[in-house]
Length: 102
Image (cartoon, rainbow, N blue to C red; front, side):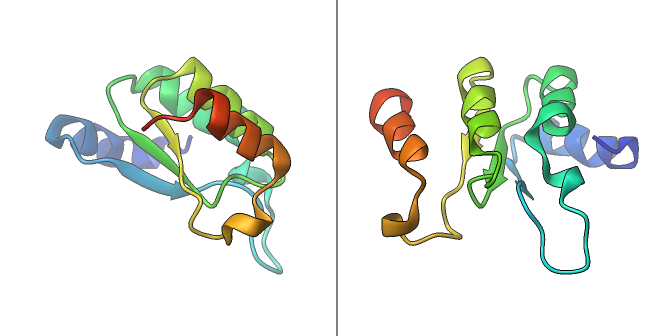
């Protein structure tokens, strides 16, 4: 939700380009806090409702927050590319079966 990135969010929204960003834990020696979907990504969703947002790497360990944002905002998606399907959290599998978009 860093306002320095708002011009990028605006440009992506105006051009119809989805924004893909890291959500969830980070690597060693970096704080994972900015990767929490709520409140950080939620603020961006509220201020840019027309921006398509792809939360990269499931959002673990906060995948529940990502699932909530996908339910609350029709422009938010979860990218699962960081994990093999056999490693998907059970709650995410259930969410995809019940609420996932095609």
